[in-house]
Length: 223
Image (tube, rainbow, N blue to C red; front, top):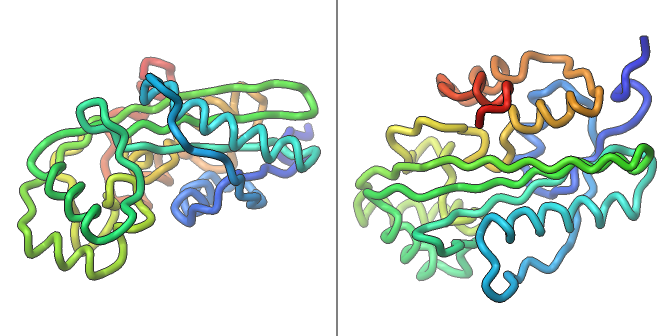
């Protein structure tokens, strides 16, 4: 039997190397077509509404340009007490974000959008993870900023950074904090009859070194 993913390309609407890294763990072949969209929040727009809208805008932009591939888009934001933290513009803003986040928990939201232009199917999903940050010191912040790593990251940090390791005690989806919640994506693709060549939870945990406590709940639709 021929499956959807054997006959049609998957297109990732993102330039993020972290999303490419994570999507590759599924074993699916894919192409990359970054989407340029206006990411300005609307007046009184909630973080959830914002991240969903931007993810859909990315998917629709690429779906309107390329055919007949199935488009996967995602947008990730850091939310601290209702305030969206984007990518820091400079070292001063990165320092401010990292100082504000340390020793506290915040939320990371990723909206996933999948559009199948051929069938017209358009499926959304949303992952939310509470992220507890450790009490890293000012000297650690300065060393991390000097590495240059914070500047293309929402909230000015990467959970996977081997030197900084800012997160301690995570109990949610690690891949979501990296930028692409793989189990949320897997359940969405399965609804579109896409066969996944690999065991996604197993591949994700092996890659990240994180013993995920929530993957079964996600795959079964409880999270």
